[in-house]
Image 1: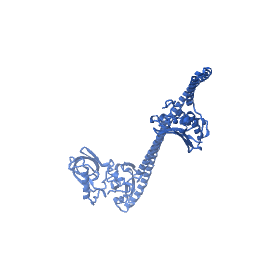
Image 2: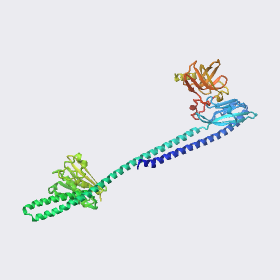
Image 3: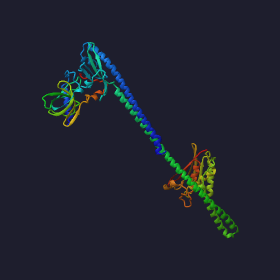
Image 4: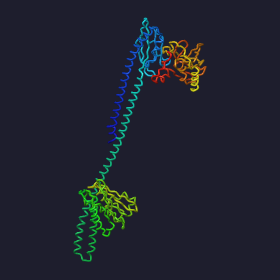
Length: 413
Length: 144
């Protein structure tokens, strides 16, 4: 997925969600504040009325305005109060804050109310008429703030902010994971593309090599037949040379066959096989090539080890590995072992030759890579191809001077 | 030059000296009257610390003589612990405040030596009051 797509399909919708959340939170908060203010106003009206009645009664009892207001001073939600006479002279007042009575005598009219935005929060104030029993009229000026309202609003704001931050954090983590997934996906896509190109190139080489092999083998066959005819009619003293020529022709044909098989795609015909039998067949084939090497080649495979494989291909792979091991040195011994590992079969082909130099360790399975004078670099490459075609894997472990071990892990029966 | 600690120490000493002393009975108009705001220019003649409100710290009071007048006024500034500037006797200053009775001014703003100090807002809310308003359940009531 491209960065632009990631932005359009993930970042943009998430930003939209955040925006909607912010707008809804803001509207909710405004609504909540409006509701809270209406509630405080209602409280203030009722409180002012009740206070007015009580003050009226207490004044009628002959108490001084100051004494009357002192009775109500400890009320939690009343920030300040003042009692004014008909001439708007302040008779008494009290306040939670020193000297603070935001009373404007020019606006002191019955029913007049408002909100003061003070550093201590919003203070709602009103002017309430107090009618005393002796007929005198007073004006009660009251400042009121619902205790905890500001704290509640602040808490709501904090919670909203916290939730918003949490949302952003979750979103960031989500995008981080998406980015990682995307990076992995891109890497795998590139890898797959490279593999596809490699296979494509290999197919082309394969087709080309097959064509070349076909074109070479036809004249070689004709040449071989021709040499047979010549040998039949030739004087006996030149026949050995003709025979030598034919051997060379066959050697060239063998090389062409080897190359041809190396580039051909492998399609194994699977059957259940006893590994020991295949290993012994490989040993016999190897001893036919090197008759004197019998004591140097040991097969120690458990007869119970079975696997699903193509008989001919598995034989070819084992033979190639054993031949490579035998050729490691003139005195090295080759040992083939195998065991079942869960659902797979582990095959080990070991030699005690000079080992693979560290610089060559990574290249032994490459086609046409060989350190031997007469080697073509096809054997190990072909062995790897066969193992991989069976869904297995092969690796080489070597210590210079202490020998080499080829380990094949291939699905069991 | 600011010497807040020196002043603060002075305030604390004054508080200790005045400890237990009740504030005098005050007139009903002893509040910051937004309708009676004045601007005064003059000289500080005396600096005092006096209890002004019940159960409160002593206040910084300046005895202030207006320019071209023999009349002196008592200027109520703030609790001594709040005011952290250095004031000297004979200091010239401009005070914005509210007349709160005979010869008494409650200061809102003091300007001296090119510096302006706000002790109340335009409605008379004390600058030290926000902190006092925060702890819930601890109502601090003045005498009036």
